[in-house]
Every structure is written in structure tokens, then in C-alpha cells.
Length: 306
View 1 (spheres, rainbow, N blue to C red):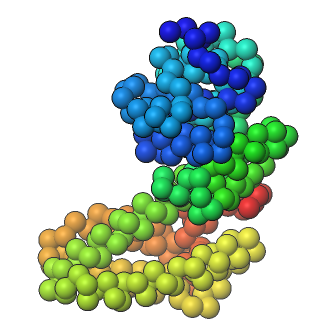
View 2 (cartoon, rainbow, N blue to C red):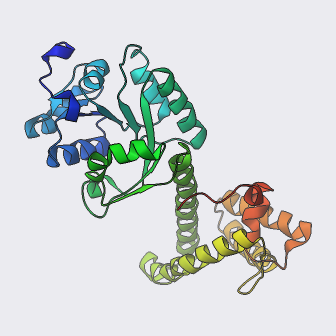
């Protein structure tokens, strides 16, 4: 099959590259919104349910991209997108919306590469699970030229009930995503460690969960407090202090050691806290730790949109 064998109206067609759970959800949403949709995946069999709904399976990335005015890439990372599209030296314009995961520097490098190929570029970060795509529950962040975002708004709105454009800095969406993934990973790690310690102490998981949820309930207010104090550059310990956290964490480390539980995550956090105390910030709030980790960067960088 060649490019000319794909019977698609190029003016309104979307190509979806990558058919993992999220890519399949994006293609399904595009079809449901009435957009002619071309799909490509290294394993073609993943496209079968989409083809049954009316999508066209392209045999190559080139066939998919050249058949569409907008290409949505949803792969494991930016390296996979670069590798899959490396041979597309003759692409005559079009728009690439990259919804793959990566950090801000990678997004900016991808935008530079797209520009050299004559391709308009938007970067994005999907903040909700695949089953939400195409529903009001989905949230996707976008960054890049606002005029380009507006040009493709009808298509992008088909993917998420909440689409947020963060600004012209193409690395913005990836910056938000990596920071949020940081929060999620550290939270899950802490939850796993806490359950391990609770079970080692003979506490039933369900019984522990009852109280663990209360800790989670503290996070929204704590998040707002961090944001306000970092913005102001002032860290009053109106609730709890870094020094008190250092003391509490020493007890947790000791308990973990008694049961032979890996205390490396606790030790890493304890070192951060101890450095803050040694720098004279023991009487400050927990938000001081974020500034301690980032150094001058927190104060020097203007807040991003959102």
C-alpha cells in the first residue's frame, strides 16, 4: 500500500502514532468525534478494534503522517517518537501534537527538530487515565504557540473535557507532568513503605488504611500552604516545623530498622531535612525543604501559567 491508497480527506484527518492503551483511547475519541483517523503501530494487530470502528491502518509512519493534517504521537517517550519519525525528511508541513512522556528539555528539542522539518509543534501532557479520554473527566495540558492550539481546538477538545493551554513555552506541559509524576511516585513510595511498617507491626492493612486516608486528607491544604509560602519567600511554621519532622523521622527510621525494612527512602528524606536544620532552617515550615532542594531556582524562576 502507498500513500495514495489511503482514501482520506487530508484537510480533516488525524493520524495517531502509537496504540498502547492511551493511543487507542485517543484514536477512539477522534473517531467518535467524526474525524477521519489513520493509525499506526509497530504491532499492527493492535489496530484491529479501531479499524472495525472505521479507522484506516497505515503500513508505515510515513503513510500515516502524510495522510493527515494533524499527527498525534502517544508513545513511551520522546526517543520512541524520534526513532519512529526519523525517516520523514520529506514531510510537507502539518502539525505534530506530541502527547508522549518526557521532560521539558526533550519537548523543546523536539520542537526544534519539528521546526527544521517544517512541522508545527504542540506538546502535551495527559493527566488522567486512558478510560477518561473522550469524556469530561479527562484533563490534558498543552504548551506551544497559542494560535496553533486554537487552530486545532476542535480536535483537541474531542480528547478531554478539560484542555488547558499553559503558554507559548513548548516545554511547559512536560514541566508540569514531570513535577506531578515526582509527587505521585514519592507518594506511592511512601504509602508502600508505611504499609510495610504497619504490617510488620501486626496492624491489619484495612485497619491501617482507615487512618492512612486521614494523612492523605492533609495534603490539599499542605499543597496550598507550600505554594503560598514559596511565592512569598517566607516560611512560618504555623503548623509544624522542619526540626519536628527531623525528630519524628528518626523514630520511623528506628522502627523500620527493628523489622529489617529497607530504610533507604527514609534516609534520603532525613538527609534533606538535616541539611535544612544545619543551614539554620529548623524553625521553618516544611515548604522550606522545596527551596532547599531547588536552591535559588525557586526564587529565580517566575511562576508558570496555571
